[in-house]
Image (cartoon, rainbow, N blue to C red; front, side, top):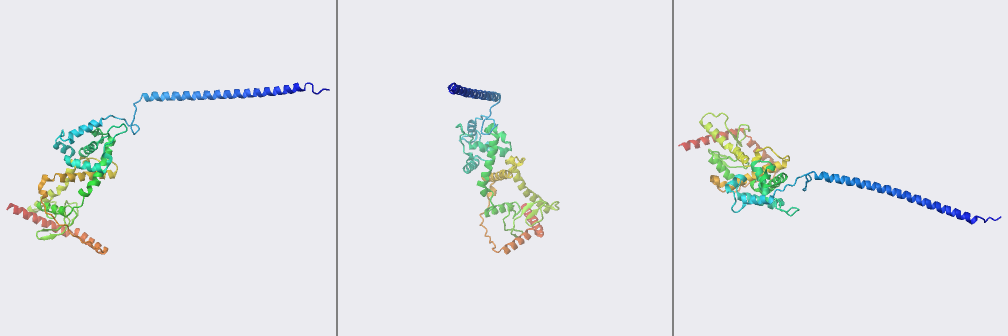
Amino acid sequence: MNFNVGGPSHLQYSISSSSSDSENDDEVRFLNHLQEFDTQAEVITRMCDNNNRLWAHYIAHQNNQVTHGGSIPGHIVINRDRENADRNLFTDYFAENPRYPDSMFRRRFRMGRSLFLRIFNAVAEHDNYFMQRRDGLGRLGLSGLQKMTAVFRMLAYGIAADATDEYIKIGESTAIQSLKKICRPVVEVFAEQYLRSPNANDVARLLHIGKRRGFPGMLGIAPPAHYVIQGKEYNMGYYLADGIYPKWSTLVQSIHDPRGPKKKLFAMKQEGCRKDVERAFGVLQSRFAIVAGPARFWNKNVLHDIMTACIIMHNMIIEDERDVDAAIEDWMEAPTPEVEIAVDENTRFQEFLARHRQIKDREAHIALRNTLIDHLWEEYTNSEN
């Protein structure tokens, strides 16, 4: 029996069958992969189509809206032509032959041109915020004079920041920032000179003014003073006050219901001089209307800077225009007072208590007022004679 018969053909059949099955499996796997690829390609195609439709919808939506730009999202870019506005401002007020005379500059800026430029130069040297720069497109930005002028319009007229845009061509936020940026340097640069404590010459000048008005020793300031009334020496200055204040030796009050010519004369003189302070604050309000209006900022430090800057500039204006009242300059040079400071803490405390008791002395208050009543009446009768 031949076991080889059909052996090779059977083996060939087995091999062919296996090979055919392997090829079929490969083909099936290939078809499966191809189908998966087609599915993925279809998914990607659909995603691209969806993405394109979204972009097309977004672009169409943007084309139907006004485009915005600038460094702050949502802010509208306005071509204010600030370069021509700067040239017009310079021609109007700061050229060699300006369009508007000095009197109109004084009225609109509340001070003379020379004083304004002095403040401007000091502020510009203190803070480079007022240096003119170029923007990203190479165009010149706002000049320091534009920013300074906008701030002075807000201080002088009490107008809103937005109201400065029409002439100065400055945005509201920039005008507000400029206001804060100017007031702080004014305080830092000029406070030492124009908010300083009075020196000996100031005391002598104020005493001279008070004496001319019938109240020798009237200072309105804290430093000690030495003067004589009706042959009696005093070593403390005093304030003129109304009836709401306590009866201290440093306060001279008016008489509520004066009886007799002497007391009536005293009440008239005292109330007239006392109103100087009220009038001074009224001048400050009329000069810088922002002081009289409601507060426009929430930060107390900003409010403090604005008020202090207005007071400093008010004092600078008074100094710059003091020749209007030449009589105030009539004063003598006074030596610097020598003050001995006690080293012992207990001694200093006892001196403080003694000084405090002296200030709150009611009898001294009444005696000083009676002396001033006699002094004013004597001057009045002498002038009548």
